[in-house]
Length: 304
Image (cartoon, rainbow, N blue to C red; front, side):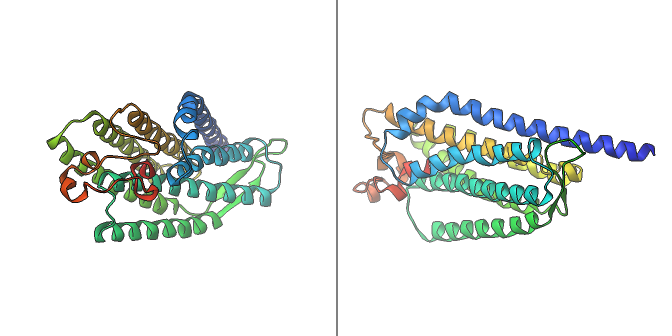
């Protein structure tokens, strides 16, 4: 009897932790939104539409959708197990798309600081990244299919309770960590090359902010992997919503800080994100001196 009561209390405690974590995540993304709203109006909405702006807007506003859906599922949903499962899987796929958008921002950012040369190395790297995205979606479909709902936790209590049949989300998190690790390494190598030649303020800001945010994003993913493997079954995914929000917030701040740095320069025109070749690829000035990065797909703006 005591073990049964202990299990009941533990289940409610786990549910309480998940609810608090979700509310905290929504609070963070809302707080950051209002902190950076003026910067978004000045630096994003007044610029032309291109891939960079499109990715920013998706990354910015999708981050509200799945956390708020999770709030509804946990706090307000009626006693309908089927509706709970469908809603949870839907928000899960939205979160997956949000992660992929963030990964694209990081990849394109690393690509731009390497001069936006689509050589064999980057062609293979992009192909590998797209394969990881497809694999992540496939793994998530298996993971979501193993989620069942028991409806409301107890009679008279709103919200859904779930049972997770597997921990396959670790595969998705590992793939996310892999992409983030490669992007961070690419940025670190180029930063090292840059700092040996010059310390111009614009590129120093780009590299410093990039390394800081890339490292923070990677750290949240590693922490999530640790939780997935060590936490109880009901808590093994409770940090995913936090990672989702922080991933969006940090990527948004990368974009805004770079645009702010660009607009502070008097010698570089930044209607979008146009890097001079001297700054973007100091080791390849002779070869690239007649090229600009105004083409949206390969500009630094596109890489955010």
